[in-house]
Length: 288
Image (cartoon, rainbow, N blue to C red; front, side):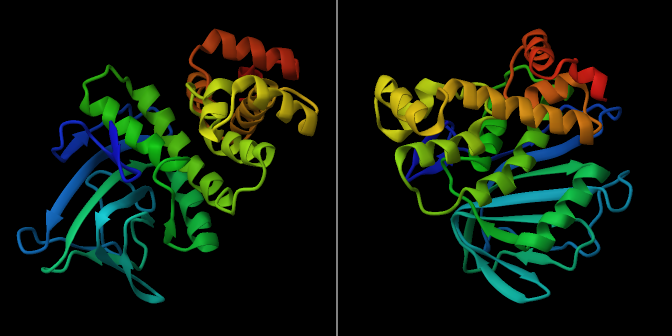
């Protein structure tokens, strides 16, 4: 994956649609994902989501996210029409009174993912009620890099099983409101660090060194500054946020322990369970 002007691109330079491994026993069933680039004069794109369905999927269970990387298209909901500009994402529960299309004189490039889950569908309806169907998301932090990373890994042929893809899809959707909440103007180093932790803690590669790099300061200087302002080292804050997320998922969702582990920024299930028990006095399975 490379970046051009902050927007995520793939090294092949060729758009593609990707099928995702799935297991019907999991509470979140990824359906498909992709990266597309089309011109309205060559490809007719016009979707009415109010009547849109996926074969075999129950009603009120399919959720679609799309993110414009370049070019533009048109989106319509109850409030009228708007142009989908670069940096704009939209979240559509199938059956909602929305539509989008690509006019003949426009070119559009976007990434997308669709999932089947009654739990995520209800969550999506609640987020739409709060934020609207369309919202601005930064291309280089928070939710978008998580989706792009999943697409890039799948495109590169990395071995991904259904549980991991399901967990990463869930983690991506949960990152959207976190990214929106962290969208204010940056403050000082410690304040910006907390905002980055909030948007990136679910990424297992995210650590103190990466945090300091993104803030443009040395790790040693950053660690001293963060501890002075927050009363604890940044590594502990990252760990605490991951465990809080894991506890919320264990108590409120139907995800397996493995899915909770991946969705909370851990790579190793045994290490995750040990940290969870150390912090809360029980294993995550004890809350399921």
